[in-house]
Image (cartoon, rainbow, N blue to C red):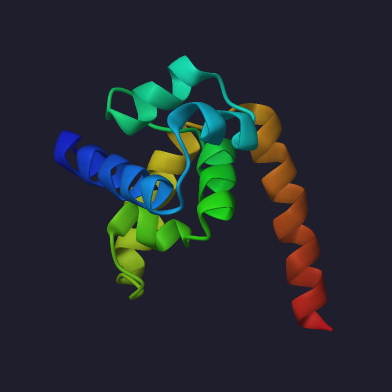
Amino acid sequence: MTKLQIKEMAARIKARREALGFTQESFCEVIDLSASSYTKIENAFQKPSLDTLIRIAGRLDLSLDYIVFGSEERKPKEVLGTDVLKILLESTDSDTLQSASVFLAKAAKIKEK
């Protein structure tokens, strides 16, 4: 992910937070994140982890696709399969990856039924 893409992602997060009337401080409390970590994300100094990105998206009622790409449209599989997954995997801790793996395995079993 380029610096420009990180800045654009941060701007989308900030714009939605402000539109919903949250201050940075109140939003940090809602998503259970330190103010310093959130400020780094919103100022594009740090990429959020997958877990944090999911919490932000959920509370702002935004899709991950919109936050990351700026569009509700699906991107080509090549982009989804490589760039996004690479970014998410690089910024995610092993416990979160394990949880996601278990969830995806269960989801695949449900779909098979």
